[in-house]
View 1 (cartoon, rainbow, N blue to C red):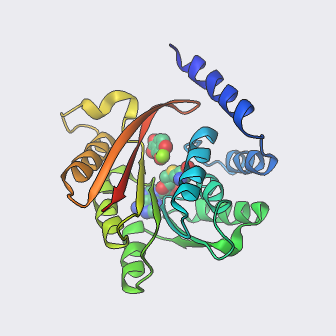
View 2: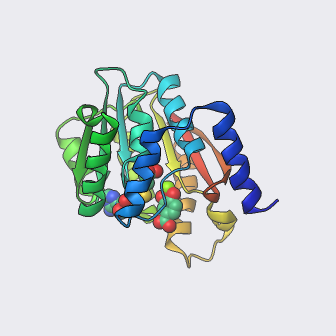
View 3: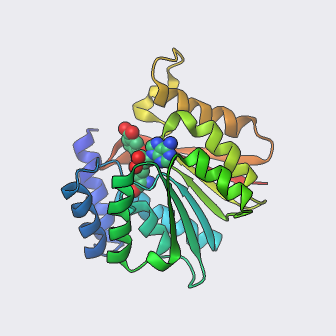
Length: 221
Ligand code: SAH
Ligand code: DHB
Ligand code: MG
């Protein structure tokens, strides 16, 4: 089965199960025009994130890795009126594009975008007692996954859902040679979740418009 088939099946999933969305299409077009890399989640994955927000009944969401805010908008739309997403982004230009996308999508009032290294923003959130968050989506620099997962534990409560993107990497997650820092980050997510007695999780391999990768999903207990 080829990547081309995965992408066409993704189109079929989207066309069959939910309406195409001019705002989200415009967000992706703006990201492209502004030179952002096309490493947002796919539409099918964005829909999964939005469903997880609904299933969890999440009011307070934390996202690490905003890019242009595509995944943020998917999640923000499912929040209740008094719900909030704190989303962390290192890159000033990505953050600027994301801000304008949040305006476009009419979700700015529900979004607290913090620019800077996520580890610094997380320390600030800890100091502010900003948690606990009901759902946490980790999708930034992969080598920091274990630090992000540690912070996720500190900013959570039993029942918090933690999702970590890019944990399969074309199957490279099996490589033990330590040569690729992103793969090491994926492996670190597995070690962390597998070794943390207060996390119960799994990983789902994903194929589709964004190739072959995966989501780790865990619940705090
Ligand atoms: N969640 C987004 C995609 C995020 S891509 C979506 O699906 O739409 C990863 C993002 O993490 C990039 O924008 C990158 O600039 C950001 N990033 C990388 N290192 C970071 C760090 N140390 N702190 C915060 N953000 C970081
Ligand atoms: C990369 C980052 C991502 O978050 C992603 O979903 C795909 C690729 C990257 O840095 O290459
Ligand atoms: Mg990702």
